[in-house]
Length: 293
Image (cartoon, rainbow, N blue to C red):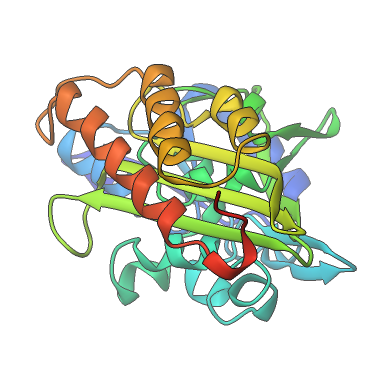
């Protein structure tokens, strides 16, 4: 294929080894493609012209979608639409499914992939806050071997990851929350659907005997990467869930963020948006399951 007389070699590797070898051969002049929903826009709008596109969609190993015990494995070529038909996601991690449903329209979800959202490394990526709460692992492969990184160690900054030369993401994996866990995903965009997040929040709480035993919170679009919020998590684990607790948690979340002014919102607006998302998320928890003193 070509764009504005720039020739682009389009490659269909048969397995992950060949894909890795092609990446090493072309170096930084190659880009991997599965759905291509972000990459093709980059090529069109920013006049970005890679020498080679390496298509992963015909590699069987990257189409794996499995549940082994309580471990979910999602191949890097698995589309969002497949995930929304997978009971382990829709029933076992419904807050992740909620986040996925906010991504584009049906046509986009039919080709876009979870791994693409991760490797794009945008702090506004809709699936990222739930994946941070699920403490997802990113599986990587190159001719030098395979390795796995926690998602927060894989994503290093805006569109910056820990991928080495010749390395590709093979899968995303995580442990499903068990009984007693409740997950919530909240997002604010400039319109009701198909909008990039101005701010987003995921929350995963383990509730036992009316008390929050473990809390995981992550916010998106308010810092160079998605943020886990250990101070807010610790506060929730030792305080009853009442209105003063909700307000203190919101304050702690805001203190941890580093938003910027851009075309979508000011930093001040994003901070207040996060406050609203925290309030809404905590108030949507099943009240009968929590002691409210």
